[in-house]
Amino acid sequence: MSSLVPNPLALAEQLSELGYVTDAGLATALFCAVRLPQPLLLEGEAGVGKTQAAKALAALLKVPLIRLQCFEGIDAAEALYEWNYPRQLLGIRLAESQGGLSENSLFSRDYLITRPIMQALEHPGPMPAVLLIDEIDRADEEFEAFLFEMLAESTVTIPELGTIRALVPPVVILTSNRSRDLHDALKRRCLYHWIDYPDLDRAIRIVRMRVPEAPEPLVAQIAGAVEHLRLLPLQKPPGVAEAIDWVHAAELLGLNILNESTAQATLGSVLKYREDQELVRTPGMSWLPDA
Image (cartoon, rainbow, N blue to C red):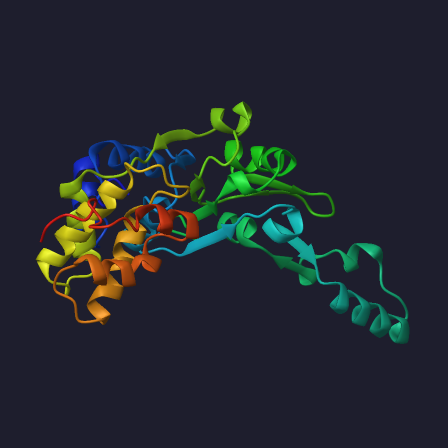
């Protein structure tokens, strides 16, 4: 691992070669998450590249990205494991015809369906898998508490089987859009980094890497427009992801630059609320940079 990721600067350069542009702060946080190893909590507005950071890191390490998408009401069955009840029922019927089946046999590994967390803990290595726990703020506090053991010790406890310990602890990346505050106990177990919107030059670099075939003036104009839009009182300010979507849409329509009419026609790529679109549809659209 030390030869593959010797320092934060090398990590940033390797990620850039894979199409993910980072700054020194994020590169250092990812480096520490890999080398310590310690879970990393990435917070920031939607569309700034939190999920993409985990994907790029997995690509760099050439290991599986195992993703757990959080949602309201998620529990251990979706995150860790569940028992294969239909197969257990078939096992019972088969055993009845052959003289009986013990309860312990019903709750053996043969009847266990593993979910993302357990898949990451049981990854054979030699390199650790990257476990992405995406949008942890969508889950509830009970689910956060459920994660404490895994985050602190790379272990989970299954009542019927005992403690499962990772032979090769995964690199754990948690993301949050900060729709609610996370518990201090969860943050205490993690490294932390806030991903802010990139400055204009870095935004242009990112979009060019993601859409290399797009005309450079178009990329620069759209990146500038997105930066100006974030200064307006929008319900959902656009991020880099929306800038990339906008460039894709403009390129599909054969545009080399944006003007008032073409920007109006493609606003759905970057602004996803009717109220936001009405706010920016002003005569002359002064927020639109010149080509």
